Image (cartoon, rainbow, N blue to C red; front, side, top):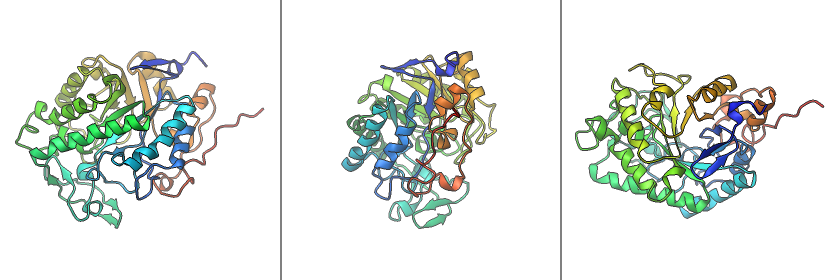
Length: 365
């Protein structure tokens, strides 16, 4: 059991983590309409605290950043206070937890914003399925392009959210620049058609992310900050031919910050944009010297192989954790995994059902 590479401890920043697994950030929509984290959420994360690192569900840094019903926030005193129960529960269980910082950008809808359009890098609509809004399913809208003079305010939202994360007791933060959300919209030439200093070149498309990371690391030590990227992902209508050049440039520049780790959605399990050759962890090893965390479609066999080979330092696991809060023990002991719950229970604000009611494995005596 102890010979498994995924079970070996690892030093990440100031922390020695018990194993190489991370609970991947997964939106579960249980915070209520006020977006204040609840005691039920604290229990959910406590159950999964045996992961080497817990990464919280995506958490909006401002009202403007909202784009999902009943997802939590970190921009008011009440939200900050609400998160304290979660951080305490994870720490009491011997775990560590990072808060993922989120701005939805064009993946939102005016129903979330009192009739005001969502914002993005450019006025380019997301081509995809409808969005669930507080008023029902709606078509996506053409977003409003952010003015250049608005961007320092967004950077400040991330900085202030990081201050609140510290106050709430988080061990670190992760800047969500993946999966087609706002910071990814600036990185991607498909959604970023700007002609100012935030568009038109790989350097300019990276500028907002650089400014956000600089602001976040002015509050939180850099070795307690991570960034999440999705170089291969088509989710939320992402992907364009210069993606390889863009993401390798981003990784090189992020390496200079001395981050806790770079979190990469390297797997293709949830869709590939096919605009360039798939990017691998090996590609990023060539330009990034810090710890790498892989993600997307990993099972036990592939997790062990990635870590044992040195391709990844950690692997973030998402869906298997939905019904297996004790996933570390199951993998350590060769116990079977519980069946993945029906998708209808993943995001519903139905309380404990499908959320905290998945039991740990009970071995036969």
